[in-house]
Amino acid sequence: MADDFAADGALAREIPGFKPREAQRQMAEAVSKAIENRSELVVEAGTGTGKTFAYLAPALRAGKKVIVSTGSKALQDQLYSRDLPTVARALKFKGSLALLKGRSNYLCLERLEQQSMAGGELAVQAMSDLVHLRGWSNETVDGDISTCGGVAEDSTIWPLVTSTNDNCLGSDCPLYKDCFVVKARRRAMDADVVVVNHHLFLADMVVKESGFAELIPEADVMIFDEAHQVPDIASQYFGQQLSSRQLIDLAKDITIAYRTEIRDAQQLQKSADRLAQCAQDFRLALGDPGFRGNLRELLSDTHIQRALTLLDDALELCYDVAKMSLGRSALLDAAFERAALYRNRLKRLKDVSQPGFSYWYECNSRHFVLALTPLSVSERFREVMDERPAAWIFTSATLSVNEQMSHFVERLGVTGADSMILSSPFDYASQALLCVPRNLPSPNQPDGARQLARMLLPLIEANNGRCFFLCTSHKMMRELAEQFRALLTLPVLLQGETSKGQLLKQFVAAGNALLVATSSFWEGVDVRGDALSLVIIDKLPFTSPDDPLLKARMEDCKVRGGEPFDDVQLPDAVITLKQGVGRLIRDVDDRGVLVICDNRLVMRPYGAVFLNSLPPTPRTRDIQQAVDFLTSASAQ
Image 1 (cartoon, rainbow, N blue to C red):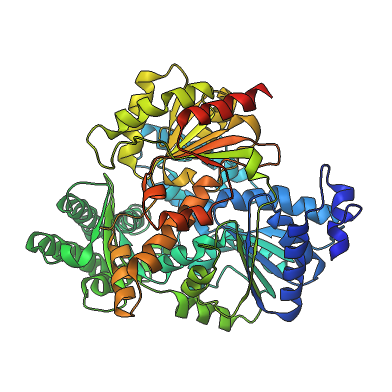
Image 2: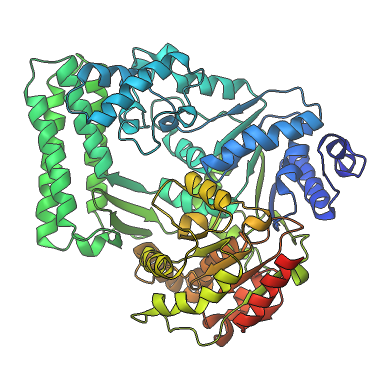
């Protein structure tokens, strides 16, 4: 194994610019050993270690069936189309590779057919997208919607022409033999290495009990990259959720079945309209959007109880009406089963007396989600692992807190795993500077955003933009963007104004932009070189203490005799901060300044836990020193 990573090894011979790194070789050896012993391994590999190659090379050398799961579809695509083929070529790997995404990422031919037949109420743009998709459906080989140019990624047509676990007809589908999901699964079954993402992996674990064959094949080696995300994603899937999107989709499917196949049952249309109306009414009853609240408290309100009863009645009506036409339409039969499933889910969500769960709800301007989430996923995840004897490998640049792995391994139930922490090979002492400015406005001060923008303006101007301003709330993000647009002549980009991929392209192309963003830019974003040399974080990323999931985890921690702040709030915030900080130095030649606008980092005892978890960087409280560092860097 060591030979692959040597100066004259297989990787160096084939990959331009490849340099041996001791930490990478150590990780590859540990991965190789875990695969050989079918054991569990947890590795924190600092930015620049080259962890992707460190797990891919031994996995490909092992000659076993391998599943690699990563944090997002974008990372999945990058791994499959760039990193994996590179290592496979270097090692002259003869096996086959496959990419597998969740059902909603593939065009559903049956639903495309239904929409074309039903036509009806589609807006002009959606109608034109539908026409474009009919043409594309004849050309595409794999049906992966991310490869379809000409239809915007936020088009309203996508949910109508893709399927979910709920509405997929499975082997009852008239177009089952042409199904892109079935073909993708077949390729995955036959492949030696399959690339999936955490959402798909966990959804798949949970739906195994249901009728449709699971998507993810059995394997000898399971590798989770960006593993710090796994506990939170697992808690979503090991809980239960009901959303207005699901209810409105159900209503649409009943309408389509009525218009295309069962035209003599007008009650179907009436029951579907009533369900859609009750879902909208319930959303209005919830009040202002953009908030995650406690479902237990919400359900004690009589006004909400009434709206929920009407929603349940509407679901019951859909169930009863669909039952009368069973056997006449595969689409309606599937809708009938969903109505039963959603009624049971609603019943479970209304029973808020069950201990061990957080009950919460969330709403945006048009939709709502009602959910219950287990406070701990460790037992459930342990069961998943025990059912699939294999080598289980978890890696990320951000797993440890204060140089300890205990927070991660306990949350995921992998306390028996071997673990290692490999530091980044970057020279932070000379490549970076951490600044916690003096005289910061106090948190939640009414004009805090204005003061902060004025204070940091000289720094952003001295750096000619090339800056990410990462915020902990949407409110702060919008206020700062407004201030900077008034103060700066440089381009100011704002998350949400276009897609994430589009924003990144604009940021790099501009060469002097300020990007103001929140959670989705804290991780999984890789901007190397001079394009990004200043990262500013508005405050330490503690989850709001009002968040019902956090509240419940903290109460549970207290009951178990732990310290809620030290055991729950602090570790979560440290890992999030490490992710944000990791955006700055992405390569050996990168230089830049990190600014954290939060006095608690230097004034509170727990600030030391944050500092001790970050790369060893020189520190200052003087903005002018930060300006000097940046101007000396650009002069080099």
